[in-house]
Length: 202
Ligand SMILES: Nc1ncnc2c1ncn2[C@@H]1O[C@H](COP(=O)(O)OP(=O)(O)OP(=O)(O)O)[C@@H](O)[C@H]1O
Ligand SMILES: [Mg+2]
Image 1: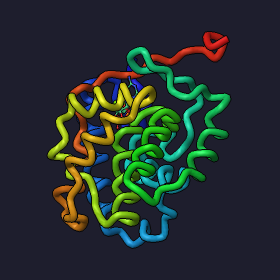
Image 2 (image 1 turned 45 degrees about the vertical axis):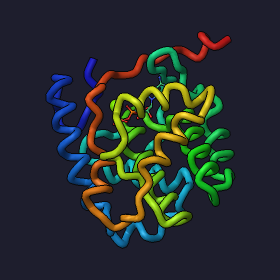
Image 3 (image 1 turned 180 degrees about the vertical axis):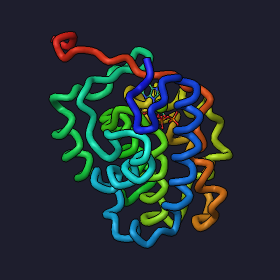
Image 4 (image 1 turned 30 degrees about the horizontal axis):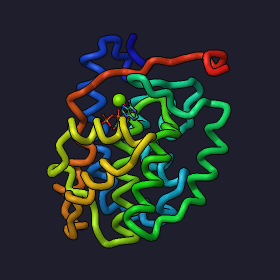
C-alpha cells in the first residue's frame, strides 16, 4: 500500500526515493534559515513546523497530527484518543540536562504525532534542543543505524541504551552542515506502519 501523495506516485520504491530526495533538500534549506530561529525549541509546535517544511511538497498531512492509530513491530504508538493530551504534557517536560532532553525525545517518539516522517523531523527537533540547551548536537554519522533502531525500540521500556548511544556521538560542531544533514539521511530499514483500530485496545 502506497501513501497518498502530492506527487501522484503509486509505486512504493519510487515514493521512498522521491520522498528522501525532496525531504533532504528541504532539510538543507531549513539549516540556518532565519524563519526557524523563532521556533520555541522543544515544543510540539516546533516539531510540526519542521515536519511541515520537510514534507509539504509531498504529503497533505505535512505538519498535521495523524488521524489513525499506528504500530511498528510490536509497539503501538500513543492511541489517537490520548495523543493531544500526551503532546501537551511533553511540551511541559524539562529540557535542561542531557538526560531530560533524551527522555523528552523518547516520549515524543511514543507520541509519534505524524502519519510518516516522524524519525527525520524528530532528529532535527532533538538537535535543536541539544544545541540550545547544551551547545552540542548529535553527529549522526557516528550512530550505527541498527543500534539506533534497537535502542529506540527498547526506549519505551528502558531509555538507558539510547542515552548511552547518543551521548557517545555528541559533538560541539553545532554549525556543521554535514553533521546536521546526516540526521535526516533516510534509514535503510524502510518498513511501513500497521494501522490498528482503537477498539483493539479495549
Ligand atoms: N518498534 C519501534 N518501537 C518504538 N519506536 C520505533 C520502532 N520502530 C521505529 N521506531 C522509531 O520510529 C522512527 C521512524 O518513524 P517514521 O517512519 O515515521 O520516520 P521516518 O523519518 O520516515 O523514518 P526514519 O526515522 O527511519 O528515517 C525511527 O527513527 C525510530 O525512532
Ligand atoms: Mg518512515
